Image 1: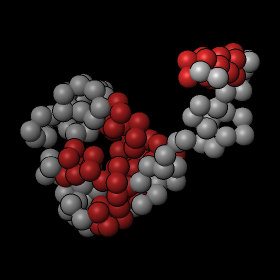
Image 2: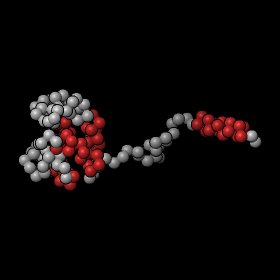
Image 3: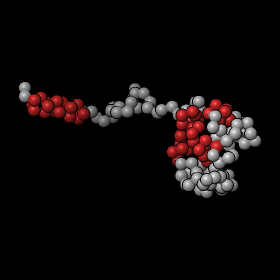
Image 4: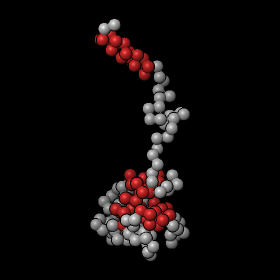
Length: 149
């Protein structure tokens, strides 16, 4: 068989294989029936700590573990992790308070607060100085996954 005919035959087989599928059982990403979940594990060390250091620790408010304010933005990942798991003054885990306050649009309640530096959060998720929607969603996924270190 010539090379051109062989290539055409292989192409037709590939088209036929794709064309025979109803589309309902294609598992391109492993997430279909019987596939494995492709949702990656979000960890504090790799994914969440950098967000807290950048947005909470650099404000000068949450940069020290063991202080009056929670130290989830402490540069030491182990200390920051312990801080974010502890129960805060509202009798809820700090990570729950973070989700509530970073999603707020109330200028008296939102985090980072309006006096934070270099840019305060004066709106809601995605506005300058505030967490992005992606950062918030990542923190939410981490909490939903059981807050792994």
